[in-house]
Length: 115
Length: 113
Image 1 (spheres, rainbow over the protein chains, first blue to last red):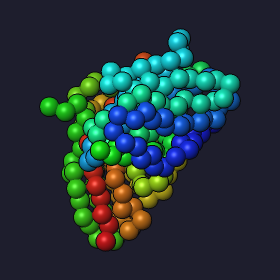
Image 2 (image 1 turned 60 degrees about the vertical axis):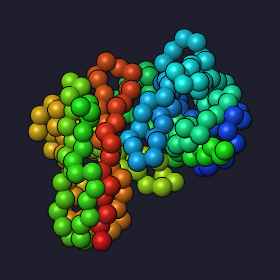
Image 3 (image 1 turned 60 degrees about the horizontal axis):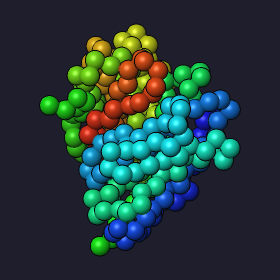
Image 4 (image 1 turned 120 degrees about the vertical axis):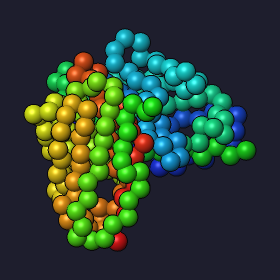
């Protein structure tokens, strides 16, 4: 079975500052990893995902995440945030080898970008 | 038009009432899911369906039932609603192609008084 822990429930940051949202996972098998974003009053949208290959994956709006197998982490980073990045961010994991067809989500991290 | 739609978007009901939440998708995906979201708990899986004849319980299925009427439609029912079922409910879809990427609807906010 897999589990996901997002280490911060809320991350306040000023506009144009860098940010890191932390995600650790637990799994006995190989995994796929995902970050989803939920803007206020909306559903979840896929931000980026790691399936295989390069351990650094990027989104179209400047976020990046690095898969670290030894530390079982998939932290999300952005070098300079905007007010529009204010949202809730969810890390998720699935088992790539066994392919359960299910995602396990973390508890979510609220990113609050202040002017 | 949105690929994954949910109706209603908001619903207030009373304890003991039967409620149905509906989900429709135009993405042509085989797999459909129902989650509930509670503050501080993230998303928890209620039921999932890999095709019309394959329905499975998730981690919190007690008090809920589902119906997969067609590939494109997946309904969630609360047979006798209780206040602790007050939550935001999301439907999601995925292909059977094997990467588990899921696509979410806009959500239904359910309040049980």
